[in-house]
Image (tube, rainbow, N blue to C red; front, top):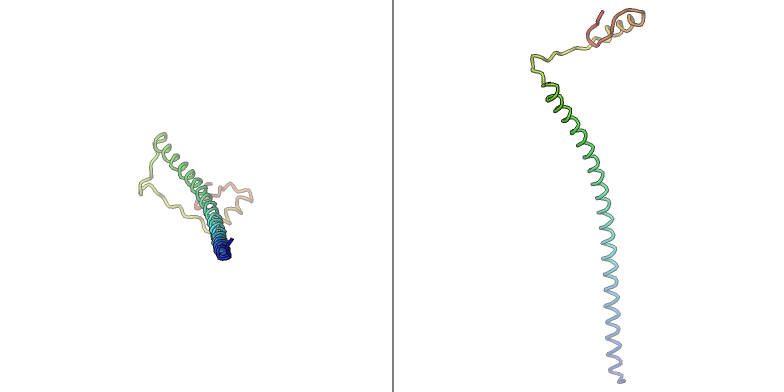
Length: 119
């Protein structure tokens, strides 16, 4: 083999080795980046799963409330009270409540109800 051909073959092989090394470095870096992206996406998936579970719980709560309201309206003919049907009940003062508790403990026949008493 001619020394000039030997140098050409050696140069081509050296370039091929260098290109191969650069492509290997690029491939490893791309693999690491993909793994990092995968990890971030799995964390986001876990957070979305937790949010989905919470939404299912809330949906169940709302479904049960709407079901109760629907049953109250259809089976028991209940409806929302009109403004003139609403009564405001004020709680007893602490002193009045304390006196009622004392009377009840001392054998009194008074029933304790916040705001009124039944004797």
